Image (cartoon, rainbow, N blue to C red):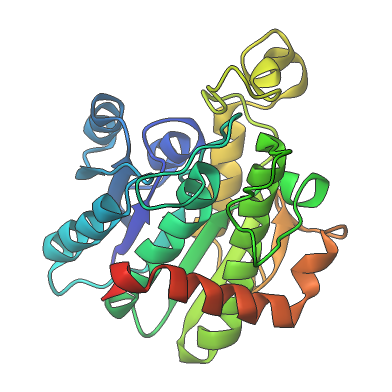
Length: 281
């Protein structure tokens, strides 16, 4: 059996770490990416996999990450890319790249990484998995003229909903543009998972993720990892549908209306390429 090469971002904790621990190492070569070196190294040592560190709030580090992955893989092809890294911030702030932190960490950086690695994808069958969230439906509404959410009434939940909505539109557009070339893409909500997510105390979501509510309303990281593993181990077109959005393991019946806006999908892609043009060359 030929082992598949799988890159997992956000692998230092939460569902990224859980799925890395749960995958059959006889079937997959894992390449783990995290922001925290110590945490990522710990998971990598447990599963005997190489690891890489990158802060997605700095796009130069994303470029460097892509170069390191390409150098490490050599002639080997990428079978599965898991865009799982993310974060939520309670206050508005721009990165050094000029983008609002949430949209950059959760959407722009994964978009850039995917584009940079695309020449290394397996041309027979490659998969891109985007971890999204039900927040896309609850809070998201993308304004192409204000992806930075720079208006005075900034809300962290709105910025997070926008980013997770963008993840879905990105996966859908990947499928539309490249499925005929052997690429499949899907986005999914893993459930409300107990992790170290939402560390910003100014975010209302901090009260859910870091209080007793955590144990009452949330699932374990292992359960979220099992959901992610369902997509990694599954077969596009059989186990799950490329270009679709899933709530856990079921194709979602209720989505943000913008999810089905094909024009918006194309426009967001084109807008993102322009914003990241200097980093993709």
